[in-house]
Amino acid sequence: MRRFAFLAACLLAAGVLAGCGGTPEPGDAVRREAFESAEVQFAAPDEGDTIAIFDTSAGEVRAVLYPDLAPMAVDNFVGLANQGYYNGLSFHRVIYGFVVQSGDATGTGLGGSSIWSGNPFPAAYTDKLHHYAGALCAPVSPDASPSTLSQFYFVQALPSSVDKAAQQTLADAGVRQEVIDAYAAVGGLPYLDNTDTVFGQIYEGMDVVDAIAGAEVDEAGKPLEEVTLNSVTISTYGAPDPAASAPASEPAASAAG
View 1 (cartoon, rainbow, N blue to C red):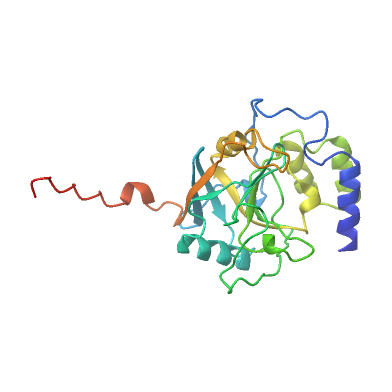
View 2: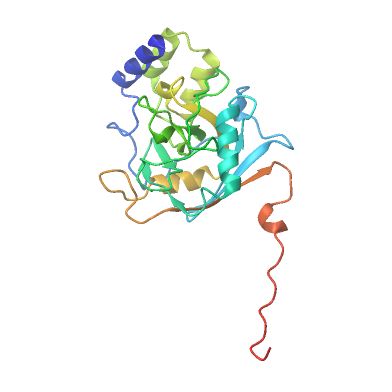
């Protein structure tokens, strides 16, 4: 891990940390161009792939999950979602150009749970998944705090976030050119590779994440006007929309009985 810690330090020194001077301000329109790549995260979901549907007070976000590449992170997320753990939680940490984070029932960033009786699970690293803009990730704290459990974040890095200097740093570190090209095109947080776990990728609703990221926040990064995660629904790509297939409610009984 020493190599990756050194790489992270170099990228930070190069000014890749989101929120540094020169980046667009919250409220600015984020223009994200389509990008074609053989990298896993840029492929459209296949029919039958596991997906997560995030119903938020700002709109809907859909992400494909990668159970074969990050099995424990996906198992934990899916299990908690199916238990209704995420229903009604807030986005407690919002940093424009960086991340939009939720998954803490206390709303403080200090809480969390897991399907393994609240115990943490190991991080999963693979060169097939990276912290590109739109990645769905599980944070890992070095002190094994609860953020390693149920909390998750969307990478909201801006398209210009990995500049020429950072690309050269990645190249000098031996990062594959395909990965460098993807970071250069869509932006991301390469210094979090081999630190946090990537277990999904947004394929619909990145504009909603950008809107949440533009919220006015306090000094701790918590939105002044609460942004709510109403629910997380686990489904499969190509299946009938869960909302559309839900049974209609029974008509209310008349007052006359």
